[in-house]
Image (cartoon, rainbow, N blue to C red; front, side, top):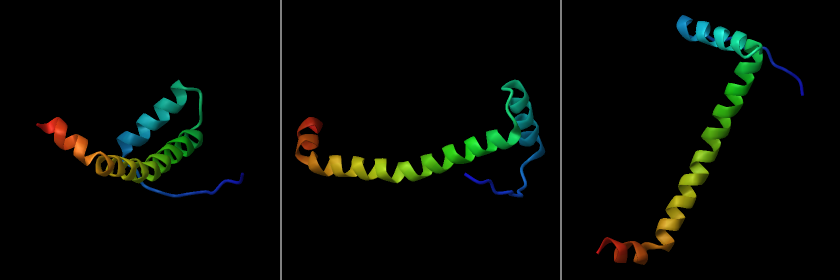
Length: 70
């Protein structure tokens, strides 16, 4: 898989924390950023699916919910 060069701005303190983490974990900043972006995208995409399943489950079990609420 190829790579893409990006440019962005982050708070200085966050940048320093990221560099420190890279050093502590023997990784490079680029690798940590790639991992962080990948995790973020995955979480943002999965959340709507989870909420949809929760809504479906609540709708399917509405009567049971009413009985339990009594």
